Image (tube, rainbow, N blue to C red; front, side, top):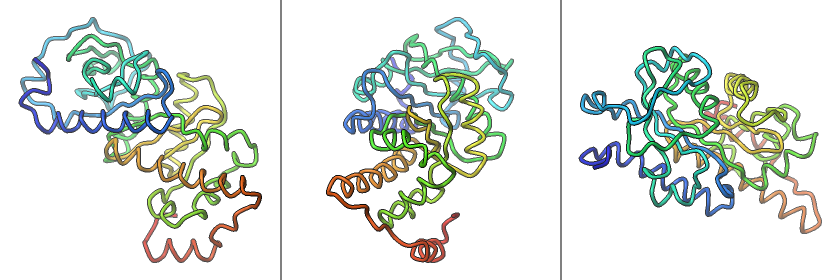
Length: 269
């Protein structure tokens, strides 16, 4: 028996997570066990799920997250590969329940797969999103090759320098990733400091945050929308690099052209 049985909405949600995981692998953004996906699935939880006994001991999150009381999450498992999650999502991830103290969680389904070591960072972001009344329920961390390469240039780490460059490569990037790319300087992976700086960047009106020399972290209403934002930003990075490899610096759209685009399509930036 699976928690997904006879729950079409929950099964569809997990199916989308598996589909996105497959895309991350196919893109070359999820080497070995790289990357993480965490999705708030509380809206799909029924009374039977709430009564499900734990299949793990309570695990300390490492911080207290009061906005997550009573929440349920699907989490990619630690040391699990995206390519395997794409085929077997409930053997390479698990559903967890946040306990009433908001400082511990327990696994309830399907197997006792321990969540990613970066779970505290992901949950801290979800706690922040709920606190600000956001509709965002999905967080995706992955390693898009071209964007990570560009983060090795100190010039691109300055506020909105890379955002403007990426927007200028193709109109769709401005339209479909309209908040651009926030920047967080290199910090130890899985650290509380990295989580705090990521939250600050999201609070500064970004949906996708670049972790210098590491990867990106995206939040959106659902996992596929988070993937899409990363995809369009990385496409622009690829266009830029293709032009440079042909021996010229691409002109890109002008500031006036991008301002017109923002006005016509009522974009936030």
